[in-house]
Every structure is written in C-alpha cells, then in structure tokens.
Image (cartoon, rainbow, N blue to C red; front, side):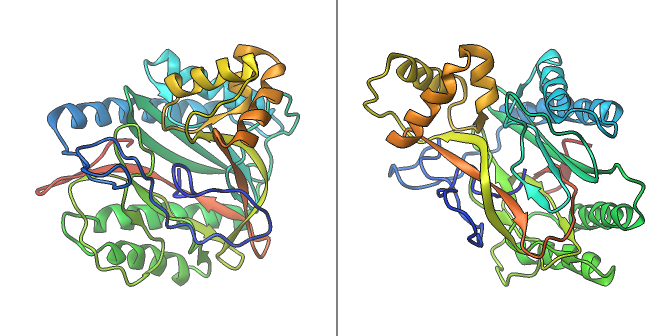
Length: 336
C-alpha cells in the first residue's frame, strides 16, 4: 500500500494536491526522543516475521484473483479477502483497498456499500503477523479494455525492473528512475506523488519512501523491508484528495466522555495500534452506533480519517506492488 499518508501527516481536506512524502513519528524503536524515527535492526526474528506475513499475502493475493469477477460486490470481495488473511494465520495490516479507474487509492467499501467491481480495479492487500507486515497489490481489467491491459502490463514491468534495481546502498532515486523509464517509454505517466515505502514492525510507513520517478534523492538504501509500488496512468501523474475514505488511524487518547466512544477508542488502541482500520470493521463488532462514535473520536482528534486519492486528470490508474527485504548481500521478495 503506497505512501499515501497512512501513519503520516493528516489526510484531511479535499481538492488539494498531495505531495505524499511524509514519514511517521513515534516509531517503536530505540529512539532517544519521542519525535524521532529510528530504524530498528533487521533481526532474525524480524526476517522470519516479514517472511511469514509475505507467504500469507502471496496466498491471499492468488485467492483474490480467483474470486474477483465483474459486477461482484466490492463489500463481498473485501470481506472474503480479509477473512482469508485471518484464516491463514495473519491479520489485515490495513483495510483492503479496491480502487476503480481514476481512483488511485484509499477506496475500501463501507459497511453498507453497494458498489460493484468494474473497469480497471486495483486490489491492495496488507497482512501482518504480530506487527510484521507484507504489502502487495495487483490490478485487474474487468471490461476487456486494451488500454487497461496495457496499463497493467506496464505497471507489472515497472515493478519487475524496480525489484531488479534495488539493492543495499543504491541511491533511492535510481529505483524511481528505473520505474519511470519503463512507464514513460510505454506512453504512460508514473504517479509522482504516490510512493513505495519502508515497512517495519507495526509501521506501514516507517522512514524511506521509494519514488516512482527520479526525484533526485541520492540517499542510499539501508537494510530493511520495502514495499515497492509503481502506479501507471493515462492522466497527469498527480493525485489529489477527494471524498472521505472511511479509513482511519489512531492518533492518541483523548478525554472523550461518551461510553461507547471510549470503549471503541480503547479497542482501537489495543487491536490496531499504529495500523490503519476502517469503519466497517467497527460496525461489525459494535453495531451501527460505531459510526457516531467514530465521528466523536474524529472530532476530538483521537483518530484521523484519510481521503480517497483521485488522479488529477481523471486518467485511469493501474498499480503493482511487492514487499522486499534488503540485506547487505541479497534482496528477497517476501510476497512473490
């Protein structure tokens, strides 16, 4: 799932172009200051955790490809995918994103969603095992459209090239350059303000961003986990914030007085910690009153809601994504 402000700065607002290169604060590690992000070691335990999550994500990805059909309800697709994650021994690292056509990201079905799968559908899946994360995505053409198929093919090729390129201490912009060259040479545009991201335990976005074009950042890649995700589009290559997504993230405890809102805040803090969650999960557990409670928590600043991200030129968007582990001597794809 792209660096789309999950775990970073606020996603409130609409109609505003987002340059999405934020990093989370309060990262769980050995940081000396509360507002620093410090990289934790890629230990044998971490490697095992990332790989286990990756293997579950791989199986869920294939399962998702089997169940997605034209006109299938998005709510049914999302719930089947998330149930499969749990069945296989993981938990969702974020709500399944099912974004269609010019919606680049941040669409997850609400509890009463009636929309159906159609057009160019992007399926973004996150799995965690005890906080260790795997992030993967693919796109599906559901209307037999040749341009859709080409966008998907180019996104896949750009991802393959990026995986071939990434290695320990390579300048991060070299990965973006490799992605952009594949996409631009095929007649499309990369989305410049969506990026891949470093992953760490309990943090979907934990430091490095992986650009989809040469942004001039020559910072060398360190050891760690990285989600690489090119986006191809027929549009302008920029996204902006649109409607609320019903995807939230916990910001911190507040003095909310309503008993249900307080109960839900406690549940969010324990169950989701620093990872994104959605309203339908809480409606399923607490009933319809959870919607009002979430509104209270949002108003009090305990949670933040993110916006759907739309391509500025209304161009169709395809996405491809895998998670890799980079060590000094090798690169492993955990979700492939």
